Image (cartoon, rainbow, N blue to C red):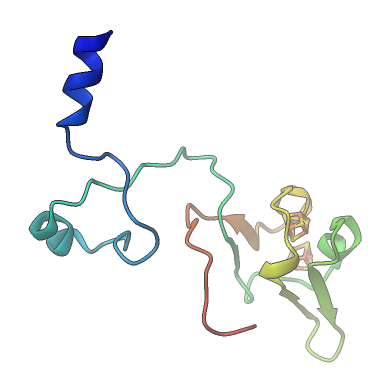
Length: 116
Ligand code: SF4
Ligand code: SF4
């Protein structure tokens, strides 16, 4: 065990500083600065939800099942909007949407500078 501990002391760290150095798609910078590759996420990862507005029929099923009231229906447009800050990523809306207008992405970088 001591041998392993000493080995670890001289190894490069496997974690990256977040978020400045952990920019997806910035492989050039990552290589230049010796930053480790991003951790891949599973196909069924529950990341930021993507809303395809043109697919949406305005059925409102998603607003009914959302436990955190993150989905809001806009009657005048017959469309919804989705509030990321309220979402708990439970997946109820994704599951209930009959036209797959709501889908999970693999995006886990959720910090934004715009409030909406
Ligand atoms: S994943 Fe859950 S909490 Fe988030 S919008 Fe859908 S139903 Fe609401
Ligand atoms: S369940 Fe799907 S189609 Fe219905 S309002 Fe929500 S996003 Fe639109």
